[in-house]
Image (cartoon, rainbow, N blue to C red; front, side, top):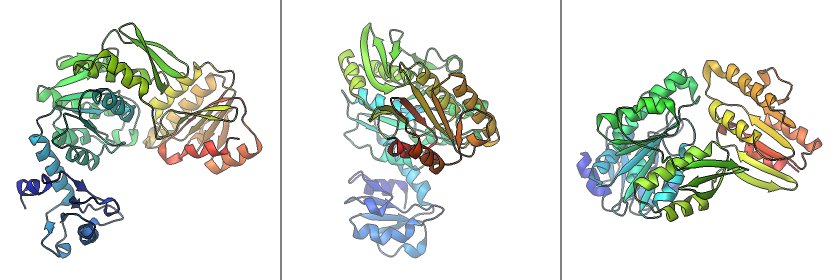
Length: 418
């Protein structure tokens, strides 16, 4: 079936699903495959649950007229998303970066949705499957699209940009993330800049942090909008406070590193003619979720839970921000950082040295990588080891920073603090 014909079926209801556990009525089911599953096997089940059609790529599963056979289901999903994008006469903003993508995307969405019907990436569904699904979730009501794009290897941002064909772009920063796939910080910069390459080639616009020298240099010959110079950082205690046109804005975001994320949302809101009052309201009412810089009050302790993800750049920023926090007693609990390749020991040692330099009251380092570092901090090979320690050693009257890679699941520590 040609993509134009498939699009006619999709455009009847603008619904696409890939999981039979969450099938919606009148949807198109795309039978994706993975290392441990074959969606083709669920084509008939999807129809029974209400799907109009199922799209498969193995002929043995084309068992009814409502099951469409294609060469490759994933490729067809991506082609359909790009075809749909070309039918949308709306501006689409794409963003990527090493840190802060999801928070920045949600802030931008909070600001723009004050005045427009927006459709944004759900959670961090920002890969070769999530990006097409985001585009296909946009319908005739959508006025602005916001697409988060993630990558851990070169050429992935280039590929996603060709699917999204954004009108605007923003890169949060260049940091030491996914070094195993990118090889080095220089590799990160080159890969993330694939978004710049697409925008520049197509005479599109980029938003740029005016204090980021690398990004200023990278975008020197591009159509660009720099951060509003009236946006000024005031303090973080523990929430970021800033001013915009000399009026204070009190956010609910922890960590000085979130200032740039807020500044990006303000600048983009201004560009799209969101009023000052609506921008202020959106920023002040936005609350982070999903273990991203959450404040949890438990007994006599104040916990800063930032356990969604971690890499050397975000870890360093979180520690430095925690250091300037006004608190009488501070405890730092850090978990291993993953996907660092051959630089893993070096980067973990650097973080161990950094956290030791600030003289926090307690420092707990968890994971096999941190256990290889030379440090005077407490070291635990696993969460279970730390759990046993905390069962006999209470933490009281302390501000506690918890940060680590997603695979460490450090949010479990909250239940151990009594």
